[in-house]
Length: 156
Image (tube, rainbow, N blue to C red; front, top):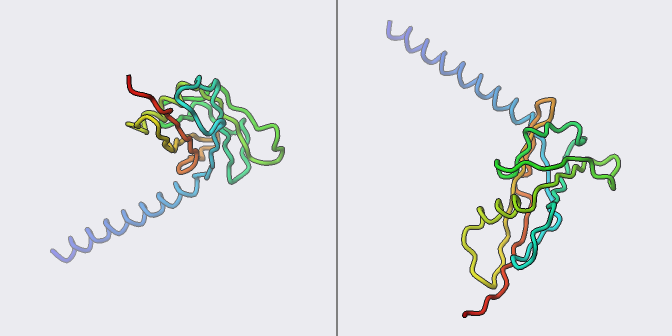
């Protein structure tokens, strides 16, 4: 009786592991790699905030702006773009333009930055995620660096 229960439990665990491996493999296969470039890619804290702040996204596969579900696109999981369109200067390439409110981009960057002393600079990597209408997801994780400069402030 004990051998039967042990075989049943072992079989259930094996089936769970096999199904889990299949699901993880399929989820990874539906993710598209994307790289992000910000325009501007540097910001001085004593300057006005750029409006809009542009995110240029290059996809590893053929993707156009009309393929992207706008309701799924988020900067750092919080802010949505005001416009999404194809990059006109690259026909045939998979470049998509995302326009964000400049204050949203600055807020996301400063939230990741934490504390910065006067007269220093810091690099902040911001991530944009989203999905296509066909269900595939994409992320710019690891790209999209903005350099923030804080000018020297003299003491009072």
